[in-house]
Image (cartoon, rainbow, N blue to C red):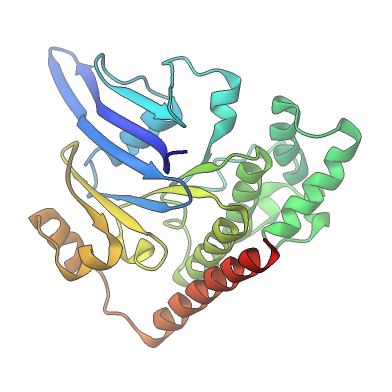
Length: 279
């Protein structure tokens, strides 16, 4: 089995604005390896969100490009199983949740749509998902407005987990949160990835957000991939001017960030050892 979970081959997307044509994504070729966190980083207007929408099937690519999931070419019109296989956690957790639905109803909707689990077991499954993201099971009865921003983002993560997808697209998932809440959500994402064997495509404009959780970073500028490499090497030896600009905006690392990185690494190593010990 190949370690390439997602493959993009010469993927482009052109928008027609009156008499003008704007190519938001231009011949992108990239792989996402099974179990990794690939960060897609770029400045505002670089095309990274358009690329995320192409992966999700919200937009079809221009003719000539293709997207493969586990070796299968994804059609322009995705089937339900394709939509289940790739889940999204959006930037703004409040706007991504229906204010008229309780938290539990929003999570359960994913179970109902995709027919996951027995109907009578789904309320308990919702409670278990809430607890997995660090929220009490009784939050299921609350409306989104009753939760904080960080709590709502945890709900959005639980909803993505409900579909039992191995691939999650995270579109600026912490940009609407303050720094302290950001770190908690990032730690949760790292923990879930290690426990569930998830694969992340993490869209962001801020390299500091993904410095400690991304395995590799893909830098996009004006719709083109200008640099890609593992995180440590990219930070130590950035080649492209766009990458250097993005790195120059990253705050100097502090003791708190070092401690966070070590906690995340220790968690991942401990889980790997436990898995190896049980065969």
